[in-house]
Image 1 (cartoon, helix red, strand yellow):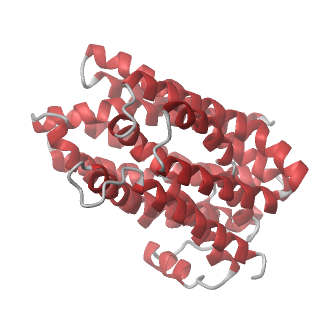
Image 2 (cartoon, rainbow, N blue to C red):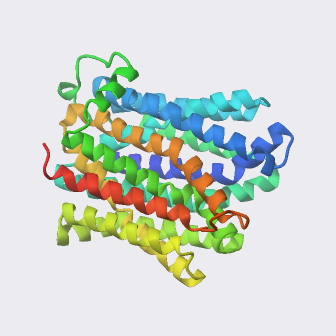
Image 3 (cartoon, rainbow, N blue to C red):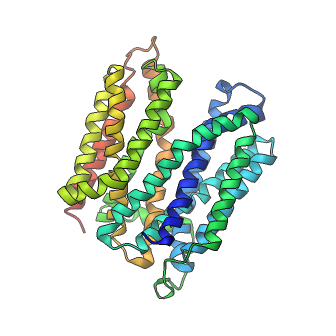
Length: 398
């Protein structure tokens, strides 16, 4: 592993910590700004998530494509500065509208992850990209392990304290990028023109429907929408339906992140070497279908808990799909390609949480016409099935 890649993975690790710190801190900040209880500001939390996703969808392809023109380093710095601006706003505002603006900036700045993915693709041969992108996922998961604990401890000193820590982490990433990160896209590989508009790039993605690239994007979209059930809705399902305590919930997430790291650092390499990328992706998607349908049956605690390491192991489909899509273009297109995949994640952030939340609330109400608290995971299973169908079709398209 080169020093450049170690720097990138450190940036991703700190980015994961930022995300983890936000998880316990943001609801309290929102309640403080609105001078209301956490329960009464849930809808604003949904608006903040949607604003993040919309901005990510709109700008990720553009910033990814821009990195193909001016280089990864400059766009990464731009994204990190955008993140710093977001948290400066959070630290200084008492307005819900400024909070929405801050999350929109954060959505645009989230392009840093797709730019890092492009930089990793620049420096690895096609056969090594899946493993390298898996390490990126593992570094982010490692940050997520520590972030919530740090955020919870910081909240002892006040609602705003975690956001000072976050700003310090982002400034550290900016400093590392300036001082240590070297450009990965050679000048001769940089394009001579910038994309004219983000809307044009989104329209070009729509034009991919029916092609192999379009099928891969569709597969990743449905995969992301299904996977969103775990970070967005698991806490509600586990506590509200399975009756788990906060401690048991936190333990399940810690186990998940630990196995996520193991799967993406070592699991990918072993699985691909033994079975090949095609079979591993199909197997992981099929495994996720079985897991989702098992959870739909509201299984006993020990079964639900035992499934979490398996869910983490099945997540190797994510970097493998990213690596497969990166193979559809050359070095001068990696920023655009990773930006397109980031747009699929953005759509899942916009659509999946409210859809699954509505289904969970409606189906778990004791007064519901059809009481079926696991209905949400039936939808998750269908989404994984769609991802598998679209992926299977890519082998017949060019």
